[in-house]
Length: 200
Image 1 (spheres, one colour):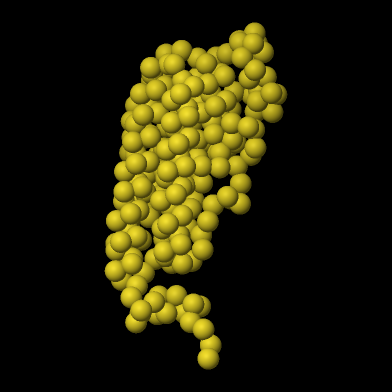
Image 2 (cartoon, helix red, strand yellow; image 1 turned 135 degrees about the vertical axis):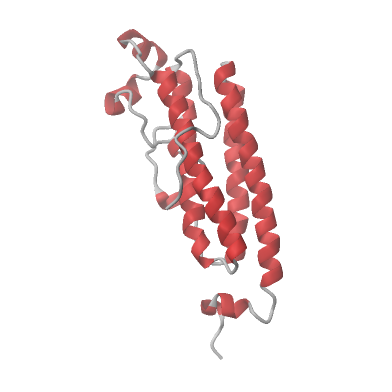
């Protein structure tokens, strides 16, 4: 389907373990505004877009989000590698550990497993692209919150990179929305989405 370069988009090299921080960061792995949800949202929405250019933007960002999922998983793994029994108990990681060990599991920071219920694919190009812009801002805020809680420079470096990509994605979706609005004028909107045409 695509050529996969077996390196992360940005290096993740965390020297110190910190299971308590891993419990926070995992929200961007499987939380409501995390990378998996973003990827699934954009890759699902691309089918109903009226132009190949906008489909391409959704495809590009959707696959990039899979790369970000890989990076967040690497952060969580490196923060929890080789933990002792005492470190697991002392950090409060025991509630996660009892169900998942040191595996990386799709869940929010609150412990809620990932679900597709929070992602939108409406089939309306304007609604979907507006949703995408909001999703990128919500992800940025989550990264902002992580940065407030984090004091490890190795982790902060990667989180800042991921945060910046959310801003770029927001701008790209803004461009896609403008392109779509130009294409959908009063004369051809029903040709793009026939279900919108009301019966007389």
